[in-house]
Length: 154
Image (cartoon, rainbow, N blue to C red; front, side, top):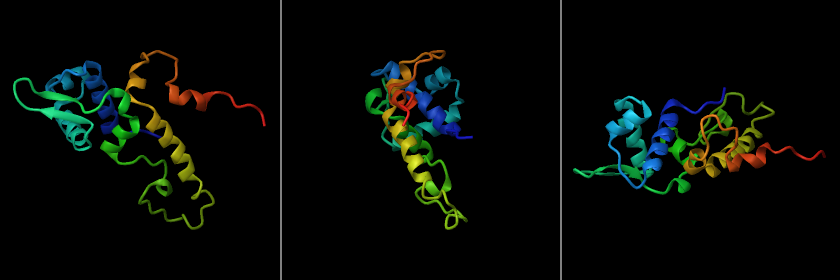
């Protein structure tokens, strides 16, 4: 199963909530309450998001956390990479992957191309795209539409 890790999932959720209240600032405690993510996990995720310059922090009575850029300028690739490193579908499509059978595998040179397509979708899908659709909405974010449209027979 292809799966985004738990920290990246929580990170995108936290970024989504920060985008919803932008330009207001939220405390870690408030983020924990809004997202239902345990406070220690919010702290851990926020460290990664701040280090990746996706979130800014301000101390003091009017302090808190806010997005460093508008939701339209933060991609899913940005968020996932901040928390888990650059996504790779297989070992042979990762930057430093060492596969034991790469020299004999007929598909080793093809996986990086598939991975590149997935990365394009993640890079083109922003927090704003995710926020436009409801929980039960059957609409597809714009970056995915063209990939899902039926192809003309060849």
